[in-house]
Image (cartoon, rainbow, N blue to C red):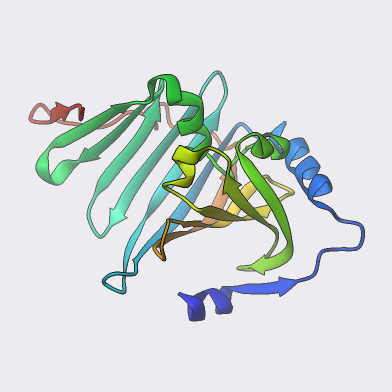
Amino acid sequence: MSVTFAMCAIAQSAPAGETLDSVLTQMDKAAANFKSAQADFEWDQYQKIVNDTDVQKGHVAFQHEKETQMAAEITEPDHKYLVFVNGKLSFYQPKIEQVTEYDAGKNRAEVESFLVLGFGSRGHDLAKQFTVKYLGRETVDGVKTAKLELTPLAAKVKSMFSKIVLWIDTDRDVSIQQQAFEPGEDYRLAKYSNIKLNAPLPPDTFKLKTTSKTKVVHPQ
C-alpha cells in the first residue's frame, strides 16, 4: 500500500491561516447543499496476519433528505449489494441467494454516521464522536484535499477502529480517500472516483433486487 499511496498523494503544508476550525466550517457550508452523491469505489482490506490485501470494486450512492440512505453495488471480485434504509442494513449475496439483515436499533445514529462518513457530513458534527486533528493539505488524484485524523471517543467504536483518516474535498464535502485502522495493523483503504453530486438517482437505487429464491437471515 505504501508505494501506491505515495504515488497518489502529495503532501503539502496547510495554507496560511487555515485551521481545523476553518476546515470544519468549510465542510459545514458544503454540507448544507449536499443532497446526494454517486461514485465508483475501490475498497482495499489489508490483513497483517496473512500479509495480503482483498480488493473490492463497485459503485456507491448516498442520499440525505428525510433520512440517510446508502447503497453499494460490489462488482468485483463477486457481485454483492449493501443497502442501508430505515435504520436497517441489508447485505445481499446473489451467489448464495441470501440477504443478511441487521437492525441498527438504538445505535442507528452511530451506524448512519459511519456509513456516510465523509459524504455530506457536517464538519463540526465530527467532534461529537471523534477527537479530530487537522494534518494539512494533500493532493490526491489531482484533488486538493484536507487531511483529517479521527480518533473515536466511544470505547466500543475504538475497539473496532483505533483511528480513521479522511482526505476531504472541502469544496464539495466528499471524501476522495479514507483509511480506517483496526487495532493492530489491519486497515481498510477506500478510494472514491467519478463523484457526482446531487444528480438524480433512479427510484430503485436503495432497493435490493432479489428473487423468489432469496432467503433472509437475521443474525442474533
